[in-house]
Image (cartoon, rainbow, N blue to C red; front, side, top):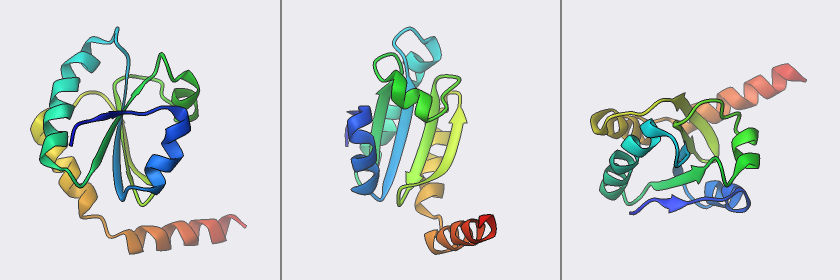
Length: 123
């Protein structure tokens, strides 16, 4: 599947309606972002079951701020609407494919149990 451009208004719905969502925060003026874009596109085509979104940090400054983006490119991965990966910097195709496989392999039952435990301790 090709990558999609995502806005702040689409962000929550995209997370809620897709099991796995990768989000590339980028800007047109960013050299590393431009280098990562074709890699991101290429890998997105290998995994049609995964949603690959792009957020232009210049056009979507509120979303970038809400996501605490301080460096671009920044790649985030969500599984069942839970942030499971966040890292600034570009990846090569092999690293990105390894990450997709790793995110697909996460035991979300365990993740949700850990979240519930942390929330219980915080109360």
